[in-house]
Amino acid sequence: MKSADSWPPVAGKWFNRNVFGFGLTSLLGDICHEMATAVLPQFMQSIGSSAAALGFIEGVADAFVQLR
Image 1 (cartoon, rainbow, N blue to C red):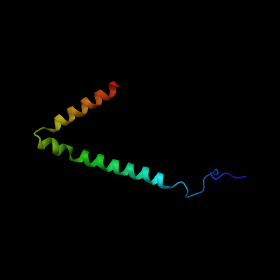
Image 2: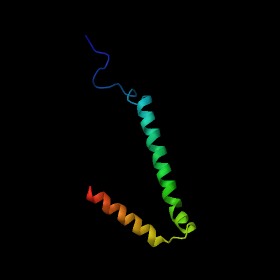
Image 3: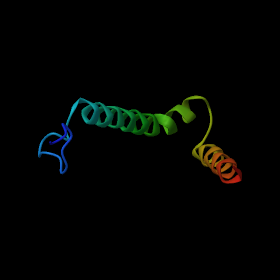
Image 4: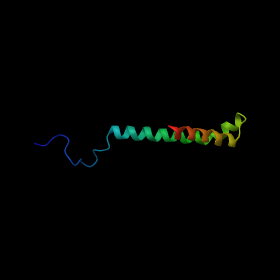
């Protein structure tokens, strides 16, 4: 007797709504991250800071991540 979940999987059955949902979530997350990264230098200038300050902030953040 064969089970409902036969191995190997049937071609085309792997792309279900869960795979689509994870892919869409990943795509939207990447888009949001890239958009925020693109406008960050302009935002830093608008609050009176410089690109060097952004580099310092990134360096401090990387240092704290390495300490974990």
